[in-house]
Amino acid sequence: MTDADEESHYLRQLIGRVDVVLAKNRTLAQDLLAAHQRLRQIAGCLCYPPEAGCEDDRSAFPKPETELNSQKVAQEMEALMHQFHPTSQHQQAQISLHSALQKRWGLYAEELLFCYDIPGLPQDNLQLEALFGRLRRHQRRVSGHKSTR
Image (cartoon, rainbow, N blue to C red; front, side, top):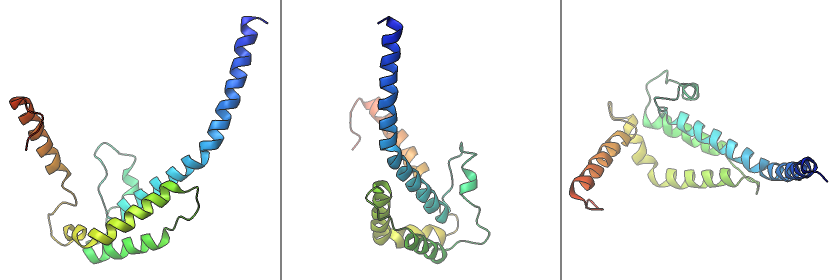
């Protein structure tokens, strides 16, 4: 057997193994895709703004035609949660998302929706958190300490 025959034999075996792995993980990938699409629907329901650099994602976040309020957003979220019921054992990502959504929504829904009733209040505090993170890193660099309590 020549070197070329050994290499092609090895590659044929490798192709077979790759096909088996792809077939095995196809359902996981489909589950993850469905969970991601559901997460984008949730973000759209909350009218959460996309990242500035994601021009192609802007279509998934429609502009509100009317003034939003907490009651309207709560109704839309409740309707969305009633539509979403993953049941198959092959839908672990969707089941995890659904469970986390129900838990967080049950615990924090009222507190999360104040931003829709108060004009000018942002929907998140990410910019403020980023500022504090930069200040904390700078303080650690200046002081040489690992913690900034």
